Image (cartoon, rainbow, N blue to C red; front, side, top):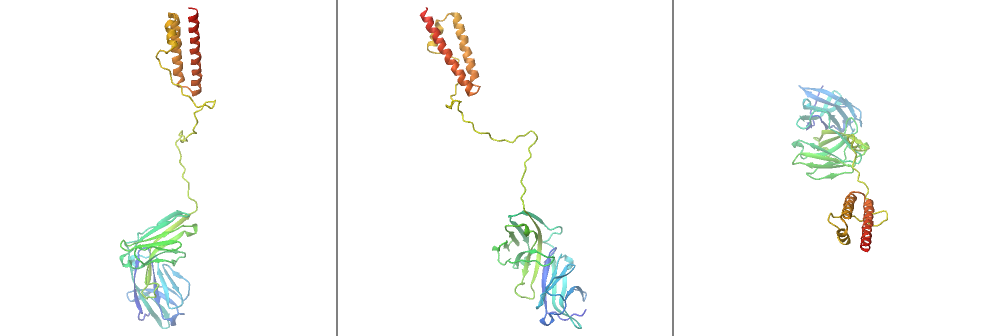
Amino acid sequence: MICTAAVGTTNVVGYWGGSVSVKCEYDTQYSNRPKYFCQSQQGNCNQKIQTNIKNKWVTNGRYSLFDNGTHYFIVEISGLAPSDAGSYMCGVTVRGGQSVQTEIDLEVKNGIIISGSPPLKTVYVGDALNITCPYLDIHTHAAKYLCKAYRRVGCDYRVSARADRTWVHSEKVSLYDDREERVFTAVLNTLRTFDRGSYWCGVETNWEHGAEDGYKALIRVTQLTVLGTRPTTTVTLPPGTLPHTPGPTVPMTTSSSRPLQVTTAPSTAQPRGPVTAFTKLLPPSTKTATTHHSTTQTEASTKTASTHHSTTQTEGRRFDIHYYYIKLLYCIYIIFK
């Protein structure tokens, strides 16, 4: 393979497990010629991909190429590993050989990406998701972005963070770059089921300004699943356990709708008033009956204190009847004395 002089050299730094995209400039007179990308090894250039198709991604393994038909084409290398580091050439195939347009010097860093399955995130409709991505100090002043991979190659985004510690907002995503900590944060807002997919956080260097040394590097991917219904939590009680349910408040009233009158147990002391005098005047046998009757009243009153309030009122009425009965006996005793 014949190579001519390179137009420029682009120094690219990628992340292990991520991907890089580079621009390859060419002269407009070669717009209709096939484009290629190859890796330089010991004086030779091993071709990785070549196509003459325009405005469509063409893929060969981990290498993809997109030619917009103007003055540059894009090459993407995915699934980066340290073994991918080295020099690459991209150019245009012409008669009698190949004209090299851009030289790529790729370096792959392995201090950020951890090998293994990508992080999986599951949220529900209406939730928000925070995604944080550390980056290398060489990308401190690069623009940061979060993109969604709709296809096997390419990653779309509409907003990027280009200032330190300043929030940037769009309809769906909010971005924040802390350059001192070298951590980039993206917040996906008000998620819907169609927002599921693969999201990459990445850096962009001189890409939108038309510079020949511009490139993009994807750092880390997050696989997002959005569920439509949030599950409910069911509490299972042990066998024989009843949940505590407060009962209704019962008003303390009697059947006659009058306020409840609480009757306390009578004292064990001797009755006062006429009952006391009558007891002194009775014969011993009568006194014993009276004392027995008083004791019976005390026991009945004591039992009344532990029963329902309706029973308490009934016993109280019985006490009144006995009292008046004793007064009647006293009057008869006075008359026939």
